[in-house]
Image (cartoon, rainbow over all chains, first blue to last red; front, side):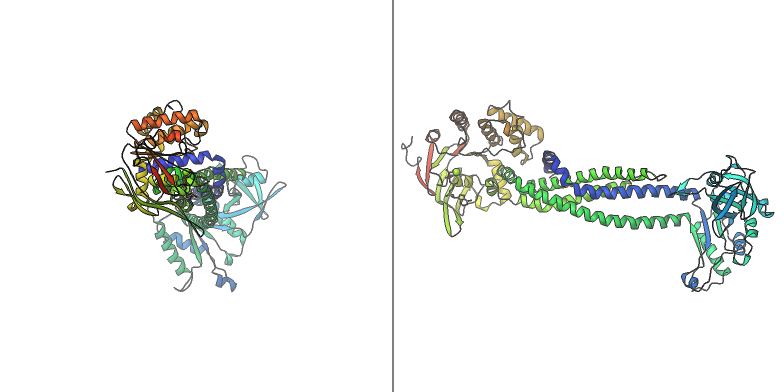
Amino acid sequence: MLFSLLESSRSALASIIAHGFRSVLTTLGIVIGVASVIAVVSVTQGLRVFVSQQFASLGTNSLTVRSYTPLEDRMQGLNARLTPEDYGLIEQRVDGIASITPILFASRASQIKYGSQTAYSQIMGTTYAYQDVAQFFTTEGRFLANSDNLTRRRVAVIGDTVRENLNLPENPVNEFVELGGEWFKVVGLLEPKGEVMGFSQDDIVLVPYATMQSLQGNQARTDIQIQLSLGENAEIDDVTGQLSLLLRNAHDLDSSDEDDFVIETAEQMMQTFDSILAVVTIVIGGIVGISLLVGGIGIMNIMLVSVTERTREIGICKAIGAKRHHILLQFLIESMLLSLFGGLIGLAAGYGLGSLIAGSIPSFPPAAIPFWAVVLALGFSGFVGILFGILPAAKAANLDPIDALRYE
Amino acid sequence: MSLIALQGITKHYQMGNQLVKALDGISLSIDSNEYVAFIGSSGSGKSTMLNILGCLDRPTSGQYHLNDHNVANLNENQLSEIRNLEIGFIFQSFNLLPRATALGNVMQPLIYRNVPFRQRRDLARKALQRVNLGDRTDHLPNQLSGGQRQRVAIARALVTHPSILLADEPTGNLDSKTTVEIMQLFDELHAEGHTVIMVTHEDEIAAHCQRVIEMKDGHIFRDSAHLPGELH
Ligand SMILES: Nc1ncnc2c1ncn2[C@@H]1O[C@H](COP(=O)(O)OP(=O)(O)OP(=O)(O)O)[C@@H](O)[C@H]1O
Ligand SMILES: [Mg+2]
């Protein structure tokens, strides 16, 4: 059997090469199918690797708690809030926290002025602990200090994009910027973090939490976010459990009520991203399935033509002793190899296409083909070749030797 | 016991509402190392006869014993095996594989016997040398003359050391000089101990053979084995 396989592959290969151009055209359906799936997979996988790196840099052991208004409540005009009191409770009662910081966002993008320059940016009120939790460090000057918060100092740490937009000097420390009509002194410049999918992570202004609070006035509507990082031995599930229990109690929720807050972990965000990717992959997979089907039918068609063309040859082989399985195997292997070649070409083309797409979008991560995609693409095209080779191969194997020899 | 024994062999073709009796009750036996020619007018059933002897075709009725095996009882794969092991077939139109070299063509039947590559190649080279084509091993069929092609076909038939060589008008497509060469080859093969059975139109070729069987309308009209002296 092994011997027959080897011999059949040898002659199958010879006949594919003998019809080089036709072979390439025949496999075009497979080539296109495989190329498109590989292009999409390589781009999305490149993206995934990149995004997971980004999430990892956020700190895999950090969580964010923010308020969440269930749809029902929102329709009644209610808004869930996370209050400074909640923050105080969490800080005191939850075990396993290394650092924790409240974050107060300005309700909308705020105007910043420096000299005659004006820019809009995201302003966050937070504390010195944000540095640990979010892994933000300064390249110039210093980060926010505890004393800034206690005395509600009007100081700001700015991202590099803000510095550029405002035409601030390379070292903007000690310059003054105007935020919502108040003057703030720049005390630090953040290390650039680059972009994620075209969004700058450096378009950000940090001010002391208490300063932000006093600027916003209306305390009754304050809705904060809380970011925290876990201590070394803390279990993420344990901490989220504690948080959930504590906040449900603090918010007087019945057991039938939905949470009015969400706890986000980097891992969870990654999972959300993955599930979006999975949907994309399934949709693409369906499209590719159809194109492989079409490709397979193309191969079957050309193999049937090939059987007819080679009827005499088949007759000769049978006359000198070929058995059914010799003929069957040869045509099956030929069709499988044909399809597999298509898969290989598609693999290369798809990777090229993916790299081209990734390369043409600025700051897009490089294309990457995971091993499973290679195995799947080749496995599938081989399988399609065998599946659609069965009919032509059986037709060849069933030829009567004398009829085949007489065929004109 | 004879190598080939036929008993009441018929081959009928139904063409529309007309029944063509290509063979109509043939009984004969051929011994090992006989040198036989089938002659007769066109359409008398010679090729049909040879195809049945070569297990390429099955008779409509009758008994065919080859080496004491009843061929009628064999399935398609067993017939393939018999063709591979016992029979070397040589066709008027050569029937070489067009995309294989002379050597490749001669090696082909050995594939079906699971002979490993090197051994196959060596056996095929020897067979080509036997038919004086040792210097044309790498030529494709369309790079060879008619006589050379027929010699490749003979080498392919010989390489398996079959007990019977069957040739259907082996010189039908060749000029007279090449015909002489090919017939010399058959004479030698017979002298070496092969059983040679051929179909021919030409009396000169039949004259090489020890036994001449003349066919007419699917019957055996004359068999020199039973009429000693008439054709020899
Ligand atoms: N496949 C077939 N279908 C129908 N009739 C056939 C078939 N093969 C052969 N015949 C008929 O059988 C008869 C014998 O044919 P065969 O080929 O044996 O003749 P032959 O003696 O070899 O003739 P030639 O000398 O011309 O080659 C012919 O009348 C032919 O028409
Ligand atoms: Mg004939």
